Image (tube, rainbow, N blue to C red; front, side, top):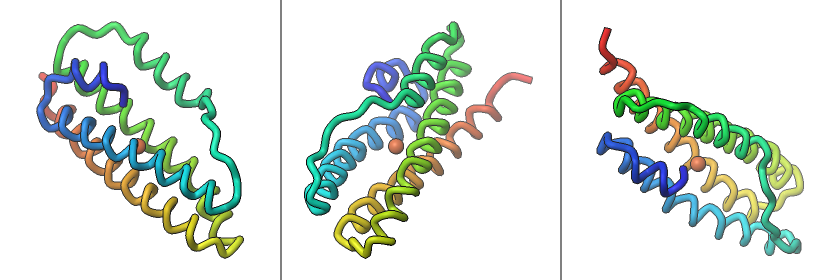
Length: 134
Ligand SMILES: [Fe+2]
């Protein structure tokens, strides 16, 4: 989740979850770069059209009510974490198929944190959804 989104979130638990995961994501980048090096490849930044599309769609939502805004931010985080898990799975399978345990362990560590982040923001989204007026 982007720092600007974290700033505008009012729900303390969601803000903490997003900020913590942003820090984890910085570690993920380092692990992925290390996995590339261990595989003898040079890491390079690549833009994800899927992530960019999710972000564009999310930012186009014109919602001013704070609880609903937080719920939409939490839901967007859930979508992003699902996408990230889907990106890790085939690369992790490839590393394991190639018996590259060094790379696999780095990628598996990232995947585990993505999974935990998904569980956390999913739980928060559920709570926020339950708080919506009926
Ligand atoms: Fe993530």
